[in-house]
Image (cartoon, rainbow, N blue to C red; front, side, top):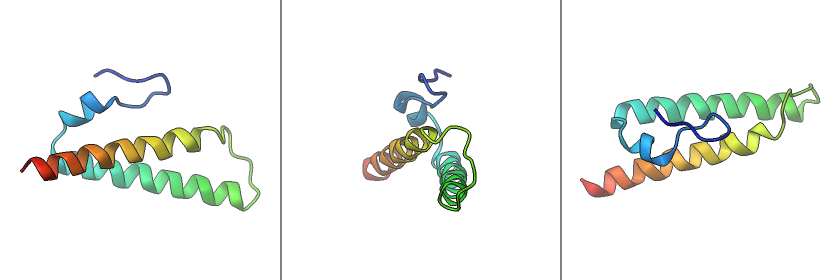
Length: 73
């Protein structure tokens, strides 16, 4: 697997995943992002707040690949 700078998977690698695996990863990242946002908004210290931007972009990248796979069928 090839990973990006921030430890994110590249779109090329995401396309190789099955639909179910991609769906699971989207749910996991979305849940992790929601928890991080909650901690951040409640005033608790978030280790790397900039990481939220990367996570949001990663979820968007995964959803884009998922939509591309659906349209290809």
